[in-house]
Length: 451
Ligand SMILES: Cc1ncc(COP(=O)(O)O)c(C=O)c1O
Image 1 (cartoon, rainbow, N blue to C red):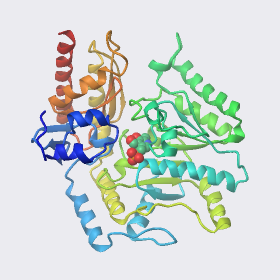
Image 2 (spheres, rainbow, N blue to C red; image 1 turned 180 degrees about the vertical axis):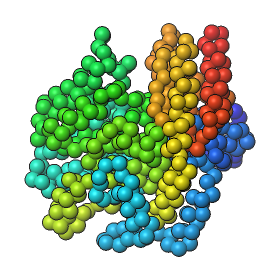
Image 3 (cartoon, protein in one colour; image 1 turned 45 degrees about the vertical axis):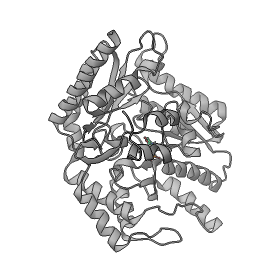
Image 4 (cartoon, helix red, strand yellow; image 1 turned 60 degrees about the vertical axis):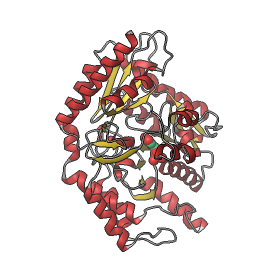
């Protein structure tokens, strides 16, 4: 594509540093300009239509162009465009959202704390683990265990929790006190001859061994996504969470469920915690909380976490934490309306009823000789390209991705896996249309590879 001088693309290249982008490649190729969205579709500035098969960043649950969210934002903007929640101030949208989240929480929770991104919510969770351990007179109980391929964000703390090399490399991360245990991807991490049940046992044993090696009195919490998203849509094997939670209970290790992707319907229940039968002490939420129409995230904490925190804040005189836009009234009002839409339109029911079709189409793709595996739950899934002579691991996915774009489907290449997480408003016909396009893209790819 030739980039015209003074075009949006040219100005973007001149002035804009992009996340998760090779800056030199961007200087050469420029960025794709997305101009508008409607339903499950977005359109670029040349008018080409794409099925947003990733709902943006796993997040636009109610789809694009939802006028009720625009109205909720406009109304709140006119009434009270901003106020903070520091120093015992509050406003109606943050109260209502906190109440709603505590009422709908999948396990008993005590308080909601607001931040603006998933990263900040997880950062806050980590700080609260430390604060609480000090409050309880256990100053050494601070280490946090995460998992290889887990994704928890990019701030210094949350990037440390993330278990992916590109989030650590050249950033001098992870921080001390953050440890990573085995990833529950059976096909990739099993040992020779190991059954799935044996693999699950080993995952739990690896966690227990790590806790014992570090000393149970030094391990404060474990964090995990119910289903791993950005690490490649990795669905844990049956029995995995039961075995892991047994170990956490045994050593008095808090459990933080990162529901930033799974929350608000994605897995076919309102929360992944329900789908995978989790008993977390803290839950982090973002993305589909507002369908990303506004930046907002929340951390839910139970009484076991709240009580020592409250004591410590009384001792010190304040809970010395908070960001300016936390619980922003416009973002909170949009989140409330978004949750109302998810409930009124029974989008969780839509996920559940379309899931068999979605997973069947993914499973059919796994029969393609180019593909080694497909996996998914609810309306989130991926297929993985088989290793191929002449290509390093991780090279094939980024080659297929632009072919799918040409076909009009936005997916996400995670190494050699292509991920799909469409808006939850998608219809059965649209699921078929998306996978018909993906299959055409795969045929094109096969022809290219054979040429
Ligand atoms: C499970 C999970 N946790 C945390 C985050 C970080 O959220 P944010 O990008 O809003 O900081 C993400 C982002 O993709 C995520 O998928």
